[in-house]
Image 1 (cartoon, one colour):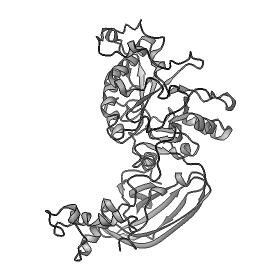
Image 2 (cartoon, rainbow, N blue to C red; image 1 turned 90 degrees about the horizontal axis):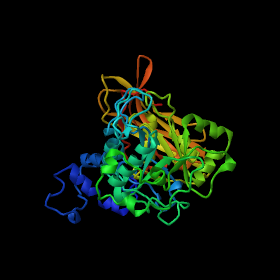
Image 3 (spheres, one colour; image 1 turned 60 degrees about the vertical axis):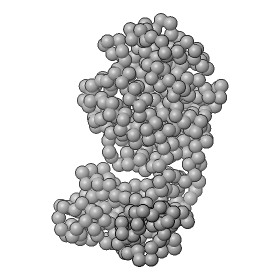
Image 4 (cartoon, rainbow, N blue to C red; image 1 turned 180 degrees about the horizontal axis):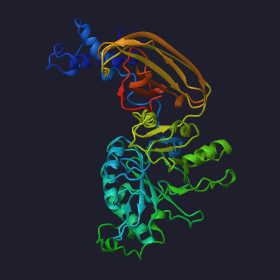
Length: 478
C-alpha cells in the first residue's frame, strides 16, 4: 500500500515508516529495540495506518525543495526579505522592537531592514521616520541581529540600511557593525573583485550590507585598511563620536556587493559594478508596463521592491508578480499574517531563504486532487455547511479554481471523497502555487475556517495530508 498506493517515492521512505508507527502506537514496538531492529509488523492496525497517514512524516509538502542548488551567483536567487523589520504593528504609531528582528530571523528571512536616524545623544537610533513610532538604539539592533543572524539559516544575511544620519553618526554605525559582526561582515570582495557576485554557498555565515550611495561616487575601496579592523583596542572614539581619523565614508565602503541606487533607464546600466536597485511598489508597477529595465536589472544586478508608504496598516503587496519579473528581494511586512505573507512562506519553505531562479518555459500543468476528508476543523455549531476549495495561483494567466460540494458537519471531521481536476498553461511552472482552504457559509457570507498553500513543485504524490492553518479570524483568504 505504501509504495503502490501511498506514493512513497524512495525505499528509505518505506523503511522508516515503522518508526512513525512506533511513535503513534507504543504497543507496536518494544522501546528497547534499536531503529535497525524496527520492522513492519504484520498486526499493524487500521488506527496505526490512519495515524501515519495524518502524521507530519506523510505531509504532501516536501521538507526541502528539489534541485535548489546554492552554487549560482547570488543574483540568480529569490531571497526571503523583510520590510521595516523593527515594527510589530502599523506604520504610523507602532512600537519599534527588537522582537521584530528576532521573529523575522527565526523564520529564516535573509534580508532585514534597518531604518537609521540621528540620536539626540550622538548615537544613531532605529525608527520609522516622520511618524509616531518609538525608537531603539542602533547598537542594540546590531547586537540582536548578530545573535540571531544564523539561528534558522546559515546562508548569507543582507542588512538593508536606510540611512538618514549625519556623517559622524554614519561612521559610528560603520564602526559598531565592524565591532559586533567582526569576521561575519563582508568587508572586501571574496575573489578580489566586486564585479563578480559570489554564490550563497561561498557566503555561508556572512553578513552583507545594502547601503545607498551617491550616483557618481568615488571608487569603492577593494578592502579596508587593517587599522580600521582592529577592534580590540579602546572604544573612546566610538563612544564620543570622534571619527576624524576615519575614511571619507567608511559606511559606504562596507557595501561591497550592496551599493544601492535608483533603477536607471535601459541604456544606463553600469555593467562594471554590482548594485542593488530599490524600487517602490508603485514604481514597480510602472516599470513592468513601460520598459524592460526591471528585467535587465534582475539579470545583471539585484532588485529590491518595498511596499508603498500608504500601506499604513502594514499590509503587503503580491510578491508573485515581483518574482515573475525577476525581482530577487520582494520585501514584505513580516509582522502581518496575511495571504501575501503565506505565499512568501510557501515560496521559501525548506529553502533556508534562497530559491534558485528558473528560466521561463511553456508548460502544461495538470493537477488531480482527490479530496477524501478534512480533519480537526474548528466549527462552532452542528450542521455547519462546509466545502473545500482548491486554487491554482499562476503568475501569467488566470487562476484556476475548483471546489467540492457542500457538506453539513456534526463535528471536527468531515468526509468528501471528491475528485478535483485543474489544467493550466504557464511559462512559470516554478512559480505556480496550490492553495487549499476549508470554508463555511454564514448569513449569506463565505467565511474561511482553515487554509494552506504550497509551490506545485514542492508537492508529493500519493495519499498525503495537506496541513491546515486556522484562518477563521481573517478575511483576506481568496
